[in-house]
Length: 210
Ligand SMILES: Cc1ncsc1CCOP(=O)(O)O
Ligand SMILES: C=C1C=NC(C)=NC1=N
Ligand SMILES: [Mg+2]
Image 1 (cartoon, helix red, strand yellow):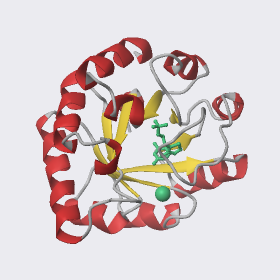
Image 2 (cartoon, protein in one colour):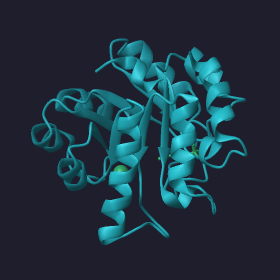
Image 3 (cartoon, helix red, strand yellow):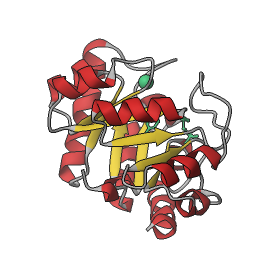
Image 4 (spheres, protein in one colour):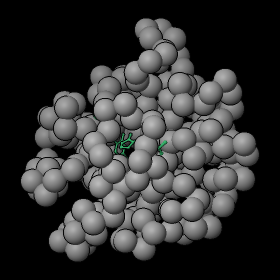
């Protein structure tokens, strides 16, 4: 996997956009130059059934139009059905080594919070790991407490070859620090999905992380 796809990794669900049209938000972010998109449709107000699939396909088609990888969060079945570019799983989702087998040659991302979880992600064949929450976040109901940059710095030092993306409360103000700590990129939900000017915010963030 080309580590650069992690540079500015936008994650969004329809419920992260207030009353804006999520497809319009996604297209603005793509126009701004995000390097990767994760479809994360879960929790309160998430789309269901046929509407969920249709919405996922629309997001995937937009990513194809802009040549940006389309990653599915949690839902391995959907990722297989859509032939997504990859999938991202946490510790409470399907086991990474099973997902690896189910989706050979696709991007596999794993969320980690401890060194042991990093080791098992590497053994499972993960292409990148997600580390966070770095800062306080309002976008994940069951997020662990903000860990700051210490764990990320530790992992970067121990596994310099492992692609790593930071996540959690990342904004224009603090994104630089996450890159300086050694992350290959930043994963963001609300600082982009709830921005007044989505495209402009993405462009500002790109200047910071590139
Ligand atoms: C999915 C996820 N995992 C750890 S924090 C988080 C949410 C990040 O959202 P935001 O960028 O709005 O803080
Ligand atoms: C929890 C997560 C951690 N990291 C990434 C990249 N995506 C997620 N959904
Ligand atoms: Mg998950």
